[in-house]
Length: 301
Image 1 (cartoon, rainbow, N blue to C red):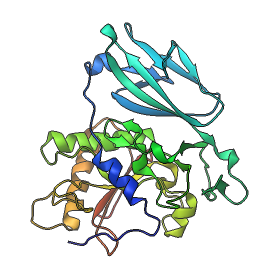
Image 2: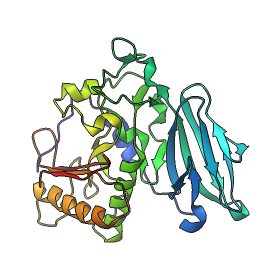
Image 3: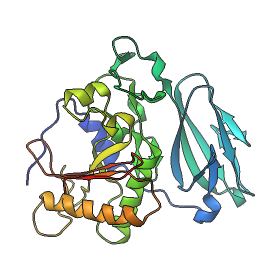
């Protein structure tokens, strides 16, 4: 088994704390009674997130019997984001006052604030080759455990650069989170693991970091729309579990996870995206790449 070495810019302590503290919250009501709409899109999860720009009006459509508040203040048909980047919390309750969904609202730091050097404050973003995002989630040191879905925390997706610099900036796409949640839930349902989350080896990458490691010029990681993941529970040792049961941790385990995901994504109601299988090297163990690019892409198998 190849043990991973610490990457040059690793934020390993933060990731370890986040990964060990995850647990999926209990659902208060049936999925039918939980559903409501944000910006015209149904929210199906008991825990979710939404990214909005400063001053943006976020339409909220509730079901009969539901009510909602943001940071304790009642909202009805919409919420206007404040002008400053930050984190806010939408709570939707159903009949009897039961909490049916909690949504983290991230007011983004506009990308127009990136200076000529490619920095947001003291955090280096770099320059996007094209399609610069509208903005970025701003995180302070204590914000890593903020939930973005039932099984994932925002700190799991931080770029591995500038470990001592705060605030940091990150992106996490809803389409890819849906793919990751769907995969994890199915693996658990089929008894292939009892993991509370997937270990995210690499999530968001700034263009600066993406270029530094020699990744693809238009990598989906730069848009928060990709994650390199593996199952790490038995034992929790920083590498993929022996999920194919052959007594060794090799690329065969990444291939097993890839094959499972490919079959699942072919029948599940999720956004189309990329899927890749990778072998171990001197720095990391085997893993699978999952992204939500909107079209099928396959490699490495």
